[in-house]
Image (cartoon, rainbow, N blue to C red):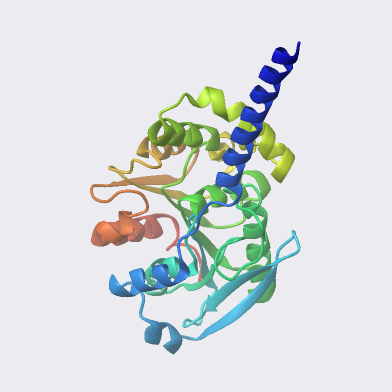
Length: 305
């Protein structure tokens, strides 16, 4: 009897350790050092502090529905009602969004870039890969529309987790922008985790995901099944430009292809020849800009300014 209890104890302890490890890796995912991000973008020529400071920019504090502050920059060099919100990827900060900000500034849009919860200067204790972040994005959209008027011509650009967050916002909460650019999103969080587990840990994800999901529901009050852009993509009626790098081995380009196929209505897709995850702009800049211009010309330019 004692031996049976010891075996049961060790089995329970093993699964407890696995569940805690799994959820810690998700909830408290190691972020990139902010100084590293800043220096990386400066060294690559994508961020020039003096250029940013020369723009009409103001710091914005936006209250999250979860009680913390979302830190943002509102950059408005143009006298226009056209705005784009930039939603960065996991482990990054709004500094990584500056290159996309400039892309849209050069095309006559004003921009708002912000830090996700638990990233950069924003508050929040955990990362949820779009589940809670989608409500923060809605708070950002609501703030901008209340500040600048409900007649905005609004776009949202998201990269990686930021793109998944954007699709979850538009598919589950409100189709609240006039157009979207989804750069390397995952289509389903459970499938994404399964891919990473097989690639990095060489174990069967079917053994880990159920216990991990149970612990995630207990600790952070949501299920990985709740984070599935492809399950809500058909609810998005506004135009979407999907972008992915062909050689991305972190979030597979097949996920973007699946999202594109399931999206009804106006859409475009661009699969970049060069670069790995979240490198489509960095490694294919002229083609990236050309495709964005084609998308804007097809679906946005005809709308009133």
